[in-house]
Amino acid sequence: MSGLDGAIFGDGLLNGRVRLAQPAQGYRVAIDPVLLAASVTVSSSQTILDAGCGTGAAALCLAARCADGAIVAIERDPALAEFARRNVSANDFGARIDVIEQDFEVFASAHRETFDQVLFNPPFYASSAHTASPYATKAVAHDEATFSFDGWIAAAATCLRPAGRLTLIHRADRLADILMALDRRFGATLIFPLWPRIGTPAKRIIVSAVKGRKTAPMLLPGLVLHEDDGAFTAKVENILRNAAPLALTG
Image 1 (cartoon, one colour):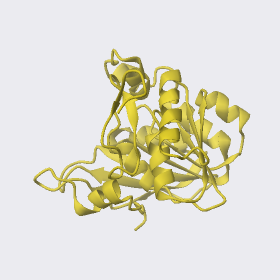
Image 2 (cartoon, one colour):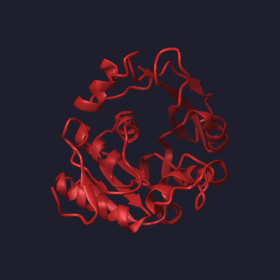
Image 3 (cartoon, one colour):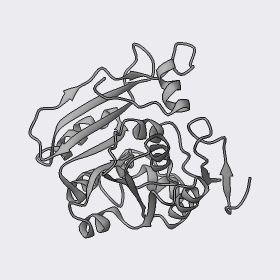
Image 4 (cartoon, helix red, strand yellow):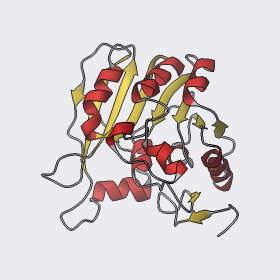
């Protein structure tokens, strides 16, 4: 399959229901955006923002799983935004997903209290905590050098309507940073660990919170990703292949 310079095409996501072109070098989509999209519940009248959408994986999976809702996907990197636009077109979601090339902070300032939900898979590393990738798209995807995590949360709070919901996936060891950034902006926070295997520490967490709420956080049982032999568990297979929802509260 061809049509994008420097692109590679895999078998797609959700057992081929979503076709995804990606840069031949740099950031590669894994299961994180699929799990993130699966954890979002959408009603027909809602507007959803996928911030820092990359090549569009989370927005596309959400659109494939939920027939309702309008999605805006923003991406500051011009090359990734072009991939996202073409992926939206290739999957015939042009009527439901609008891809905009813009910085999240700038976009949020221009769209105050516009969205019912925001989701994102932000950079995982503070600049001092890792060595940046030589590939520009991967470096931007992984590194907070140009936009801090607190900035991501502040921008989400700006563009969410009152009682709007933010859902994100991040590294489990950044939980303290996440809760600190959410404080005074969000509440009723749900913390959903993703356990690599039974008996192992979580490496990822999905966090969902409501703008303006004061309710205390809740730590949920979470989801085990792999069996002892390395295969995905049946529940994860159902999410990744059959577009099953991931209900954070059961």
